Length: 502
Ligand code: ARG
Image: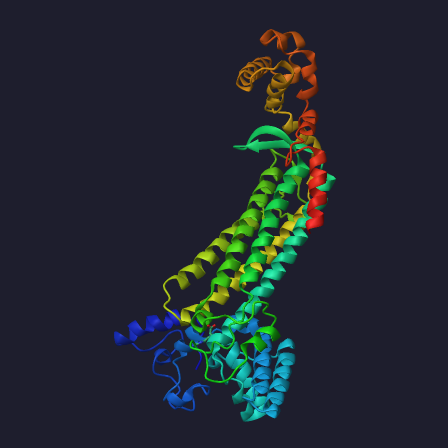
């Protein structure tokens, strides 16, 4: 019998009930399912290693052991790896050309079936590797048994998973490019749009919206390089390490590495080959860092969309309403991106903790790697696609942004800098004088430009009416032309450079 994982808790509870002398079950489950109702014969045990066994696994053992529900996602990689393996076995004279041809044909048939959604999950067959091999035997008969020569599921899963994670890195890179492209378009549109730059979430100095968006282009560019870097390191083929020690068959690992597109050739140590999951962890680390950046952008969108800020309006397609408050428009997608960033760190932590105490070489703990990575990959895709959609369709409220940029005496630094430049005043003294101007303006209830020439020169006679040139937010951003600064001209140059790099 099979037992669903949801029922396992009841079965365990029944163990206690049975011990207390009440075997009857209200939920229709048999206490036997837990331990004694197992296939009694070697025949019923797993046909792929049944030789050594007298009985099959208990239903609960099957439930905790099987990974097919998760690792079926590796079927393409598994078949790809097997086809490369059998071609190599044939070339090396380890299996006959006829058997290899039959195996290859059978594998192609299975690929077509699985592509058609015809994978039949069977917990007794544990994982994708045994599903493919068992199906192969059904199709071509006993010759299928030659495929697993000079190979173990340990190097098989290592190569399948590496192929999958490599592809995942490439997908992440493409999605990041999509988001970067969207940011570049909006940055270009808003190279001159003025918004407040913040420190401590207090208005600091005016910046351009284009410059602000380009900050995320920088972050996401580093994320791309992290995926690329991880991909380069994982580009070595573990197939042929066999269970842990290598094999006595005259295999050609260069050939399989090449056939499977591993630029770095075969891995160099068989023990490391089957016990390394650094590649998955590096993928998760890069995912985590990307998620962290997306979360900061999401957080800004949430703040900007709030009524007191009002910097942006999210379109209907990226907002949700409230079941009770008719006026509401909530930035749920951004909030969920912010939440999922936590999941990426959790995924990295989860797999790190699985791996940290494992002795060499393979342990079954490692089977839990895939559920973690697959979930992170799916969430990353959702986050990147959502952020791209929001970036493309947000409406920026330029008037609100400019007004906010003009608040909080945001051009005070410009006044101090002007005193240094025009009056030869040491910066510290200029800072002090400007502080007095801010105080006077605050008392008068105006911004710095609202002080009269007389009021300004009364504070320090070196302040002349020429200072007006630097007190506007437009003048402020235009003056920030130092490399990496916020001036519109700089933003345009940065966009051109980023487009070239893309
Ligand atoms: N399903 C297993 C995994 O994902 C495959 C490797 C099994 N190896 C073994 N020795 N039981 O890790």
